[in-house]
Length: 142
Image (cartoon, rainbow, N blue to C red; front, side):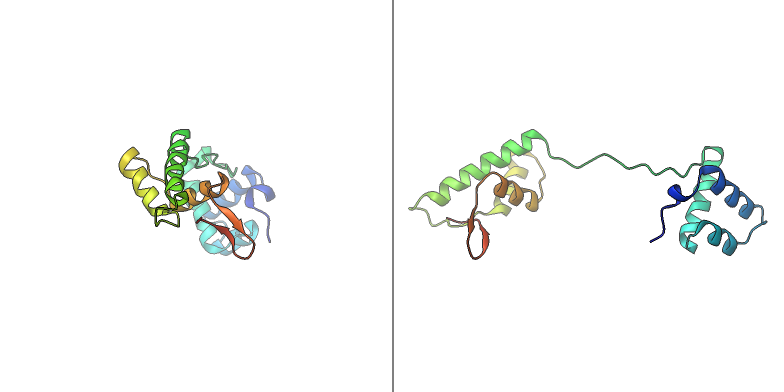
């Protein structure tokens, strides 16, 4: 696999090639060959160069906006799973499985918090609201 553009070239090299392409000194094919890009990616770089002008750079910036849920949501998931566990553990009740969709609806209605089902299931496994069956893996029933 070819290395990324910012690892193979410096800003000035890419800027020079794109500038020569825009001045019609190079064809698109020659520019693509020099940069080692396919057609669509090459024209994305041309567009980016036209938009930024002198501020053009090829540095790759990773975004650090990891999606994490707040502590309040964590606590509310734990609280609702605990309530649900009490129903499951009660032999007089006919409930035998966790209803994660119900918990999701409760979080939405009661606390106005949006949480995905995989997040709720993941928290149930991490907090010990499930047990591991020898044959089938994790179980979410009594």
